Image 1 (tube, rainbow, N blue to C red):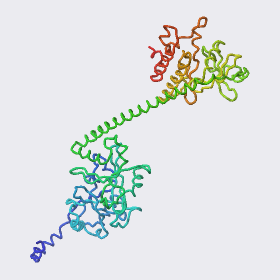
Image 2: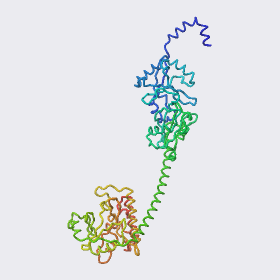
Image 3: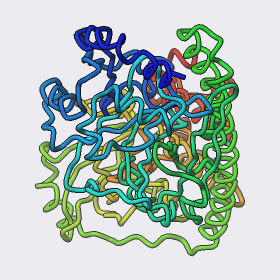
Image 4: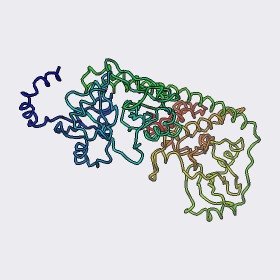
Length: 533
């Protein structure tokens, strides 16, 4: 009908056509999205679906008679990308409501005006934007295919992180329709920073209205069989098998949840997601703690059984044999018991540091021959890993030669004396276990239990590997016998069993009480007198 009307009014229409020709060209809006727009929009302000928010994309206002070549020149000025490195793709709205690049413009189309180009494309693409043209700018590089074939497909990649509950844009990739997704897995791992053998899941993002639709991709069938081509979006992530404790372990679940929240105020969406993720995190943390507690319980049971086994083995051993050192060895090791070599002075005796046969040792001169004989008699009853090892003795001067424990006593570590660093929780619990093991050994002796009687941090020493060993055990009873001087009770009082103070009788439970005070000192750092009160 238009053609007939024009032909019927040929003579009278000439002036009108001349006036139309004289009219200025109409301005149209051309929006050009770049990869920078995709990466800045996806995952921000609640924008997760599709590729770009065109409301925030740079718009070019150009005359409708402008050619594509001229548009490329303006783009080159605006974005500093030379025309020869530009490949422009047509963005169209699909029937499912999503906006995707559908095909690049050909060389021939570069010389067409926007009006002619719009008419040409309208014959093929029914969902062009009536208010303007939307384009995607691909920046060509050495790896870009120059001449695209029907087997080439441009796909866009998104990465989902269930731990952060976040999706971000990773990049774009050309794939062959005849190839399989399994072929690009190494590239996807590299882009995401995953290790080479990371197990992954791939999904195709299809639509989000009226409901979110995201389908898993079979990595072993071709892209063509999966109907994946130009403009399609592949979302991928680590395997959700190990992520079940998260609120949204997979892309599919996350998309559906985001869609359900679309009616909520955007600012509140994040709060809801954060709360749900926190609930999932706390539940997972609780499960892990329960599992860890069960594992610790099993470990303690194994250690207990092992300790009992070691105890039985130790009790079956022959009495310990001591080396007998001549006094010349001790005098040489201590520079004639010089004050420079003295490292301790207690009621039990003076302690010196020395070297005998190229071995660093601790040499204790007992206060009396009775103390010396008592200690030798106790030490002969057997060895234990958590009791200071006695190497030998020198009867001439009532001296005992012990292994050297370089980290001093536990008391100094509790109060961080001499600038020492606080003990870690692992070492503290290890020390508690070792003291328990030593007491179990002493209290299980037959026919009578051995009671330490003076269990204090100053009588617990620490070796180079922070293994604890007790010393000075079984000798407090000598101080309690008639005729002997009374021990200094001020330092011992916080550790002494109240029942012992009442009855004067040392029992294994006296050691248990002292152990309890030591444990609380290790756990709280409070002074022993405060704990005792």
